[in-house]
Image (cartoon, one colour):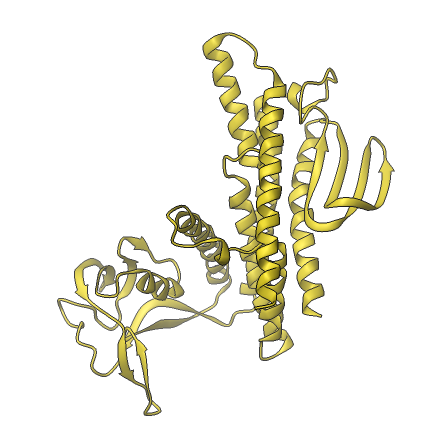
Length: 353
């Protein structure tokens, strides 16, 4: 069942993205030749007005085919014949809709919260030595770890694990004043638990509970959305620097598998839906950020080429033939499809490991 839910979620997020382009294009009077969910062979198609509405076999993408998108067109309603503001809004509308969808999912999830955890230190494990006037204190609100701003209490664990495991710089709010704690010796080690066992951790206890008023719920949803954007950028940085590789990435198959695993591992159907919703929100915001990267065939690439072309034309005084942008977008599309194929094959291989 969760596999079906995962496929539906992935398809809906794609549909929402393409719907953003479609609505913006229609609003600016651009002719839309086809609006498709999915790629590959057509399963269903219906023509209404000037637009063909299609459902295709492979749920790995979709498109909103606009007149003049790939090259010159004499149609006054072609995309290339519209102003830069109109084209910018149309290109960015898909990412905006994905971000909006992710935020709305988070808002729905947060609306059911009775309380939230704040990034406030509530105590220390027995044997913790980095506390006191020159270290950390109970009641400190952690504002940043190693220069990374803390939005949510979960961020503390993330940044501690991202650090060197030896020393950290903290900025905390203590008795209404900002206090900086530099080079605090802190490393994971075995600390005793209440049940007599031990576990390896940093020894900080944090997560002060606060009643989830309507404003707190909205704030929490906003902070989660901002945190998701930041996590996507961190992931891109790690990919560029080689800290993660192909095996750590996931395409449509991997995403569907992950969503399904999250649902099946939950203690109850209600918890499963909440966890899947949280993951869906992250995927939606991930799609928004990734699509704004300045890579040909992506929305960010379209925006980059639009402004780059305008700059070249202004400097040279000569019009750039739209076919060159079309060539770049086509090359980018082919490269993107090949990359998706490699990632998908990697996802499939993981299923048999």
